[in-house]
Image 1 (tube, rainbow, N blue to C red):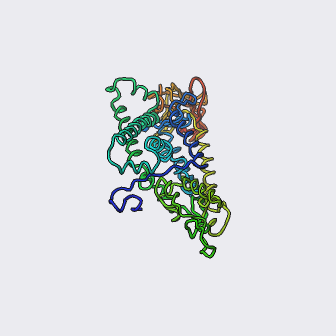
Image 2: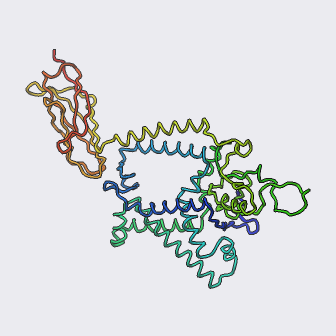
Length: 457
């Protein structure tokens, strides 16, 4: 790995200048990246039932996913969703390796399909960039470097604003942009902090995010097995590699690999795929495209480099859905079912009632027995609500010690009250009673609780 990061000649960081070859898979990746970028930049403006498509406001603990509002009271849903996500990542990695990194990961899409294209447009392909960097500082170099970094800063600023919109909301971002700076100093500083971070990532750190910082590359080493489909070199077919030769027929036979080195030249992380599966490989498929171009020119079968498992290469097995994959798939289906049930069955309001611990019943005037209760009402909606609590039985009366009143959006209130029941209605030492949560004269939730009183003999 050190050889990928440090040049032996200078003992300094080894910069990578990948060539771009627009093959079939590259075009598919481009279309996916265009769709992703369109969704990313328009996402803060999309509304579903008045709610943003995605909002992750950690400061106010207000989250919106696909128009569904979540508050801190829904933390168990986030735990369950995180568990589902982890299991999905494990299964996907077992089946397809690190394809997510090369095709869907935001870091790769922004780096390879956005900033890399700007760089190639201004400075030329990888060989021209390398020549420009090693040459003296001329007017041309200053102009190209200055233009590139200016565009990098502009687009990093645009990404930073969009990213912040997902954290605070597009309406708040609009206020930060249009109103005086002193009114939104934290927001203003956040924009520039994010801008600097994104600029440094895509102009300086670059592929080190994938090869050094990202823990997922190390995770795949534990999860891959002989049936995992990854971008791999068919060494059985390709070796021994060597240049095409027109010499005598008695020369030793060679494999299909002509040792052109283009698979290394196009790799954005600088590895040689012919050395086997490596942690730094992000499965971007650039080596597949360029190798297929060479195979086509020399009239050899395509996919010397392709999506293969170890067993497909060495045992000529077909891709199979292994028992481990089936097990993880079953777990995912169960977890997804449970998660969907909780998401779609949850209400905007939630009532919890508990009889005060250690308190006996109280005998009131006119043959009334009372119990004291503590209750909490949670408002999960994005609007304030004015609610009341009513017993389900008209014979039971409620007397507030602390009334709930109006509840702000995404907050909760606690209330204390007496339940008053005529002694003639009490048939046993413990009676189940039902309490209704009422909003706009409509019962939206009913909960049960216990009422303790003297039995009526």
